[in-house]
Image (cartoon, rainbow, N blue to C red; front, side):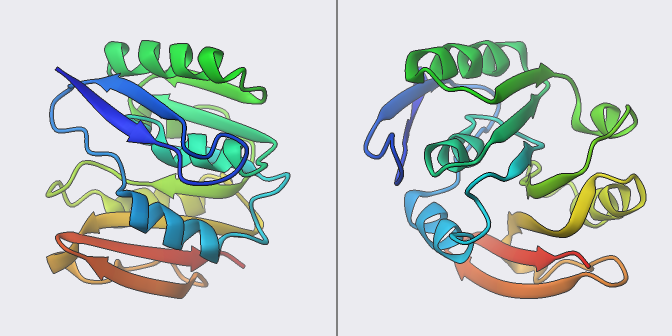
Length: 183
């Protein structure tokens, strides 16, 4: 069975895409994406973005739709990565690249700083704090970068690396989502 995703805003607003049913992949809900991209409105145009646990690709696709210059989608599942490539081709997306690799392995490779990082790891694995530390220590973040963090709501706000500032924090049902700024 396939999952469905709708792009909320930008040049592909209203476009519906499918993705394979792959082990609990849950795209960020439309209303959360709308809120997030309202927060990010001045940051997205021309931004270099990293969608680290891409899954359906909803966050990165939304960024491209709203004017991001580049999005790197990192997804370890082959079926999801292949569908992401197909969806990007269907949209005629430019500035996008899909890397089929585990997120932690990707972060051990050579880096280029990003302006915006979407960090939405699988729920209930406790990985968010460690991943933030890896991003901070590894040179992955441009000065003034924004990092979007999504996890189970009951976990509360994440522990952020030194110097990061929590700009926004909300809950929607079982999802906690946060936006942090990097110095």
